[in-house]
Image 1 (cartoon, rainbow, N blue to C red):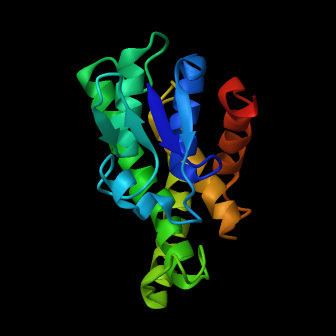
Image 2 (tube, rainbow, N blue to C red):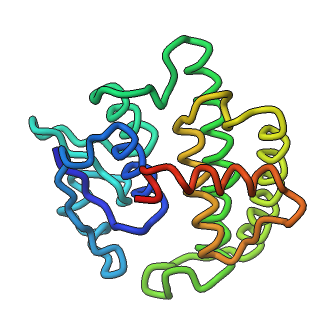
Length: 206
């Protein structure tokens, strides 16, 4: 199968980490997409993914799957290894809940700040900006960091005792925050310690 992505971008990173966790990186062909050149907005790419974003998964039968959560769910179920999305109904629900909180409150919030309240990817790609909304989402990202720190006071990982897609999403969100210059407050020691631990995983450290 193929994955159309842009290496180093936050959502493609989520998929690449999931693949590495499942030991399946070598079973995928990565096809680079020139986002800075606007390739993701071409009709040819939108025929694969009408969302006009990366990543996009292409299966051998020609099926295209977009949206990170859908792609990582497919990867988790397609390849052997410890589950990233949960094995019991309760685990799946808890992981899904925390993944969405990390995605909406951190990763997407930082993304909105970056694309609306900073120069973002430049005027050719940032065709509409609302700085007020972007700065509001920067506050949301900070609030989410504080919430995650509280969760990690009582849990080894964001959805309990096992590493999951929720941790992958939050890790990618913090990496994006670094890029967008949204700092983790020094008082959030649990979040900082969790990040150091996750950074050392082979799927991330290499």
